[in-house]
Amino acid sequence: MANQEQVLIVGGGVIGLLTAFNLASAGRSVLLLDRSGLGQEASWAGGGIVSPLYPWRYSPAVTALAHWSQDFYPRLAEQLFATTGVDPQVHTTGLYWLDLEDEAEALAWAERENRPLRAVNLSAVQEAVPVLGEGFARAIYMENVANVRNPRLIKALRTALEALPNVAIMEHCEVSGFVLEGQRIVGVQTSIGEVRAYQVVLTAGAWSGELLKTVGLELPVEPVKGQMILYKCEADFLPSMVLAKGRYAIPRRDGHILVGSTLEHEGFDKTPTLSALESLKASAVELIPALAHAEVVGHWAGLRPGSPEGIPYIGQVPGIEGLWLNCGHYRNGLVLAPASCQLFADLLLGREPLIDPAPYAPAGRI
Ligand SMILES: Cc1cc2nc3c(=O)[nH]c(=O)nc-3n(C[C@H](O)[C@H](O)[C@H](O)COP(=O)(O)OP(=O)(O)OC[C@H]3O[C@@H](n4cnc5c(N)ncnc54)[C@H](O)[C@@H]3O)c2cc1C
Image (cartoon, rainbow, N blue to C red; front, side, top):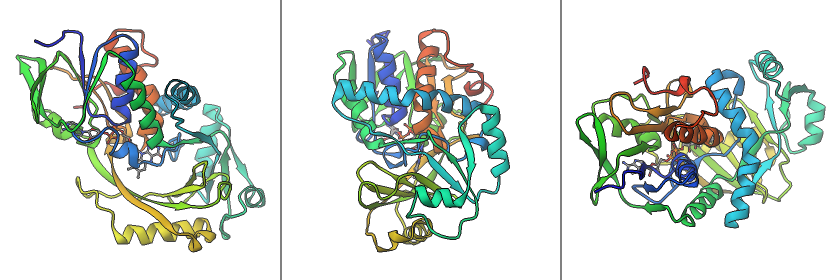
């Protein structure tokens, strides 16, 4: 017999972990299942920029989640560091966009949204970022953009959950389908048998659409492969994040520099390729010529949970009582996680929602 109050969460990436943390912190009993180890998929592979790459190109639905989350990130990191001893390292470096085609739109958006994004002349950029390559003509800069060291965020969330008495975690437990009685969910089928629960949350990232197919629903969430490379330099080598022609460099506090990323539609294959390695190295050297002499110390791929316009699905599945979604965060799952998971908890717990939940509701979209 299932505990009527227990919430079962399928998938332990950043979205599942933070969903679990918010629900458990509000007193609910939580069971979190993952088919591999926690946080080893997109949430580990991502770059951790705490902003959409081109925030002005997104709908107000994405912007609303991003703004709330960006303001909340430093507090979240401090809280996790204080309670777990693991520092997610929110590193506020600012971000330079170079030679953008839609610079005018970006500046108009910043004015409208009251964000500190401004045009800067190239000599000022060269002074602030001496390692930047030659040949760029224009730049805009937003000073308060941070990046989070996402593998550490995952570790901190895991440690925080393990300390809570009302949370159980089962790794290497794959969910293959849902158990229904009429139009109500009563559990999930897993690699170790049936697990009963009356509230089930799907936070399975790029795999969420596949799982929902098992109950005959078409959720347009599909994998979008992204490859990334890593360098190790001196701690203050690159003082800011820089982005040109769709490729970016992200400095971590200790001098690691991530350069990403590719956008590939290759199904669920996440094998790193030589062609992407060469292409990312070329972009890295164009942005920062000195990287030609640095060694690539890491190269990996992850699968983003792609969704139409990158608007996540947050809320209850229409027609199946007790089945909930928090998935489809595409390129922005790390930045959108705090607001998405707070909004999700508001909805499941029947609290006043943090922002208007309508744009994210699964009803009418699946
Ligand atoms: C190269 C790259 C760069 C990125 N850069 C950024 C960035 O700079 N900023 C940003 O905000 N976002 C970025 N992203 C996007 C971000 O990483 C994702 O949007 C986010 O991590 C999605 O989190 P998630 O928890 O939904 O999915 P995931 O982290 O993929 O987690 C899903 C979990 O579900 C589990 N699972 C799947 N199927 C099952 C099953 N059947 N049973 C049980 N468990 C299951 C998986 O094992 C996994 O642990 C990037 C992504 C990539 C790949």
